[in-house]
Length: 228
Ligand code: 1GP
Image (cartoon, rainbow, N blue to C red; front, side, top):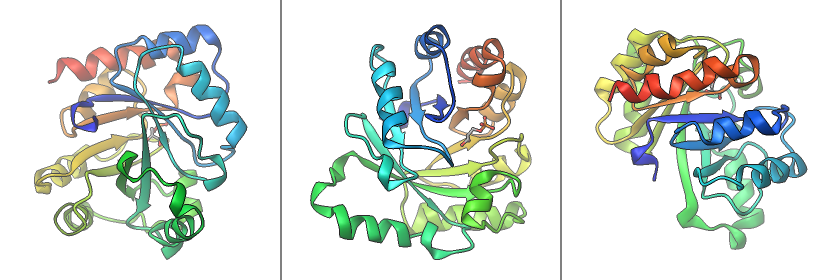
């Protein structure tokens, strides 16, 4: 499923989106809705958002960030591992604990691992994971190659959440990838920034702007798709 995604909207269960806005996001032509956030994600707000999205046909996946908020009923479950985390908990520790506790319940064939590289030091995810964000393009490419060639992760995710990243770095990382799909997220606020990101990655993830400027958010779908 992820192989065909060019554009994804990421919705945060902890943020409010009224019904009309949610409808326009779900009917926008985006390839999927990813539900996730770095803080304030609970079982209840995740169930609530999923049931609202399920009124529409768009694929809907959960990016798991908190074990207490894993809700059944999504099409896939994306499991982030933060490659440049400052603490092994975010690389593998939480994951191992989850498997130990819930292994018998896990629908393994619905799980897709994502190798995250967190590159904006001001993002909540960088703070939570104590990510080593000071990576130049060749260091980022080395992490990405490790994820691609050795770990064989289907997704490498360059995460600049909250600000537009270094598109040269993104392009360099993409050139090194053999099979992993390159997701880019962070600071896409209009069609122009979406176009720039689309030119250098496989899948563009759009988050914040949905809540600050819906019209601009919707314009990113066509902008990304026209680059194909
Ligand atoms: C966040 O990568 C996504 O996890 C999207 O980033 O919210 O900055 O668009 P923005």
